[in-house]
Amino acid sequence: MILRVLDPPQQEPLTLAEAKVFLRVDHDADDVEIEAMIRAAREQAELYQGREVARKRLEMLLDGWPRRGPILTPAPLVQVEDIRYRLADGTWMTWPATEYLVAADAEPGEIHPRAGWPGDALWPAGAVSVRMVCGWLPDDVPEHIRQGMKLLITSWYEHRTGYRLGNILTEVPVGITALLSANRLVRF
Image (cartoon, rainbow, N blue to C red):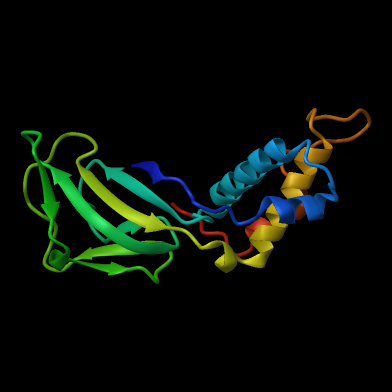
């Protein structure tokens, strides 16, 4: 499976102003760096959580239809825009939305065929494309994730060199890991 971002988030879960208040920064000299840290903290939270924290448009490419069960999508799933599949001759076909059901409330999201997956011979790799919108709007992001992002940004801002003499370093501080572990979606 390949997951591509077609349209990145329009808004991050934290604003620059929120991050600066938490960091106790009252100047503009580091704004560009802090904004980059906000994006990086959101991406770290998404990797750790197994969820799309910020609303974005994605394309998921699969090598074929599932052998059994539904297509599992990133969570939270907002909507499926379209499902296309590539035939063995290279031609792309659109699978009509009337032929599948979307369980957007499931975690992860699920796509179920109404009467079975299309039976056509498929292209050898990346044959099924699912375009969708996933992720929370900024006001819907759980507070423990926002807090974990703030702590991660603080750690990066205060320790920009990555090390300090006399301290034991860890990749992600334990308190941040604990906050991001709540409701973590683990995929197998």
